Each structure stands twice: as structure tokens, then as C-alpha cells.
Image 1 (cartoon, one colour):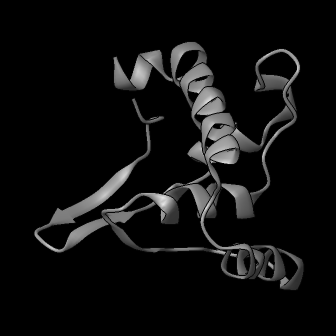
Image 2 (image 1 turned 90 degrees about the horizontal axis):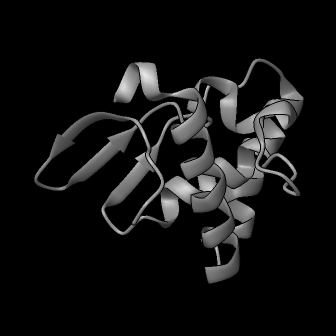
Length: 104
């Protein structure tokens, strides 16, 4: 199973995704499963870009610091298996506890 991600549009060539940080929920330390630290925005971008059908992901940095963090996703590349499992665990927790009203 894959942690839920928001799909903006889908076509035959792949998915284009938006909201990689789950409207900020994935970055909120108060919403993490017990024992987990909140991922960074770069972690969220890397998670998106690690999915085999994703060809691009949009960012919307507010300032130079956020732009540098988004660019770190490119520098670090795809998530390894341990990192991907952590992001799925966090995403599943957020989805189960904070997104029920929106996504069923």
C-alpha cells in the first residue's frame, strides 16, 4: 500500500501531483505518530518523485530558505526503502486520523 497523495491530474504519461505536504499536515510535529519526527518538505517532494508514475512535482516556496529546501529533494534523489516506509507510515497515520472527513 502507498500513503495517500493528492492527484491534481492524471494522464497516460504519468501523474502530476500537488500538495506533497498534505496541506501542511505532514509537516506538523503535533500530528506525527508516536515516536516519529515530522518530515521536511524535501522529504515530501522526494516521496512524490520516488513513485514510478510521477514525472514531476510542483513546489511553491515562499522564500529563499524554502526554495533551498525544495532543491535539496533533487540533490538527495529518490527515497531508499527505509525512508519510503517511514513516509508511508506517517502518511497512513495522517490519513487515518486527520483526513477522514475529506477522503472517507
